Length: 461
Image 1: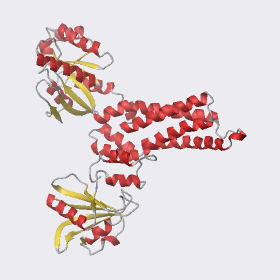
Image 2: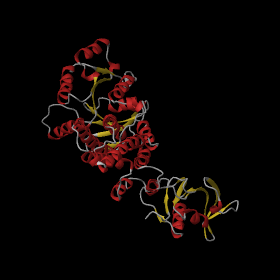
Image 3: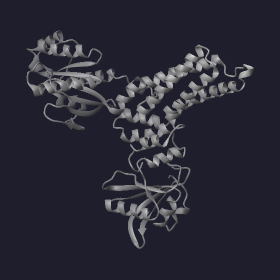
Image 4: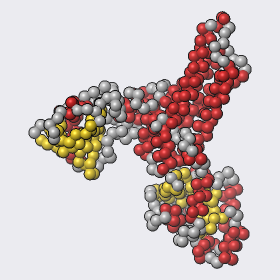
């Protein structure tokens, strides 16, 4: 039911300086007007779209608050319907009194994501753009924000829509051939069609490959820090942040479990996972911790081996053996080896470290020496070229799945063209590819899919 008028708090719940209450639907302006007394005496329903009005929300003879009311008339609003936004004072009592007043006047409480759902249903956004709204709200670093903004502006969906339109044109010609099967005519130029399939294949492969980068950017790049306790992990994070506050968010478990810290480097989120040291032990509890360490390395994109150079200077061979264990177990996984606290060593000791351990980064988290080299090394390990060039990057698992299925169908079409498959069988594969393209942008959809997507939104958006 999307022809009624909905209301919800659009700002975060709780007390604050102001709160914004949003209404959308055919009666939004009428309902707000019946409860609003303008300072200037004007009737809200007679005012132009995209105007703001100062006045009071009243319930009978009772004045609830002095507010600013913004008017957005259809179709020039976020949802494509008449929309009212009431900016009131941020008292919880005031918020609830105003919302309950609007409910009594005929509004219904909005469900999660219902304003954006209406924007999609009214053609203000396609489905991938609507999903980008949720990504934009949850973005917590520059890279994820940039990707969400690009998708919300239609960068991804316009690329898909263009391919779909070209494929649809050829599909129409092939379907037309079926109507003239007895005349044995070809309306679809097979050479041009092959060129189109090659272009679609190239674009789909690029988009599918981008998911590896997009997924880690969206969720944060997991970096497992391996090393003995007290080797300077917190000091290292402080040095990376260039401030005295290391922990942005902390997820702590029991002793010898893992601890995660999230920070942003060069606009990209990194999740640093502190783990137990790797060494031979007969201690049962410590063995569990070491097992978890290998599990975390398995899950990470990058591994950092951090050791205290001032303490390990006489046991460098043991350190080298531990590093080789990790390299041998995960030969494809990037490994950064960091010797911390080098400010406590002399030149001969530093040379010994460089000789014994290959590709070691010398660092003093205390003085800041080597930190820039570390951040550059971390960023170089992540393929952010597409991000820097503002290319389309896929971050949504649903989009990836649809693209993968479309790619499979396009490969069937390509094979059919190469083997001279009949037009009716070609048409079946083309229709399937078109279906999966349509799933991304919302030309093809169903209530269950929409329910799953918008259930993840916050109420009021």
